[in-house]
Amino acid sequence: MKAAELLDNEYSGHFGTYIKAAGDGILIEDLEISLHEFIRFVQNIPMDKFDYRYAEGKWTIKDIIQHVIDTERIFAYRALRFSRNDKTPLPSFEESDYADNTDSNSRSIQDLLTEFSAVRHSTLLFYKSLSEEQLKRIGTASGNQISVRALGFVMIGHQKHHQKVFEERYL
Image (tube, rainbow, N blue to C red; front, side, top):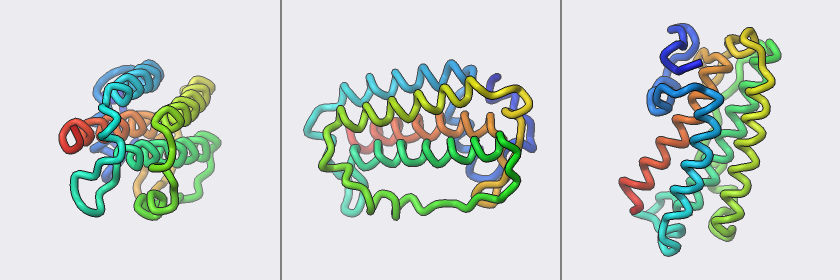
């Protein structure tokens, strides 16, 4: 399934930005490919950049990697709930509160990448287990409708968005 195959009712609001950023690859393949691309990309960042902030109050690269990990966990949880036909609307989350309550800058980059890999592998196994019917189920998150399969593309696009931020503002 490709992002271009998503129906108009499968996502709304800010989710569209990340779905567009995901590109037009196949969901399961791109979840795996983007994992390896991200790890390779991060491993090529000079060591002195991981704790760099391009402006006062901005996150470091380590903070952003932790943010990508936390966000994927939240999106995967939403996908799990919706795939199981849970119709409970799920709230948004305040990303800054999460970032303020991590210790990402004391961690090694390898430790963060290992955690990212573990989370993405869990996401991949979950998505591979879903039927077409489960992938098409829709729930409400952050006040917006979104399908399970659209959430998969959101995870890819969110990761790619932050990789682009690294390139433009940190390197």
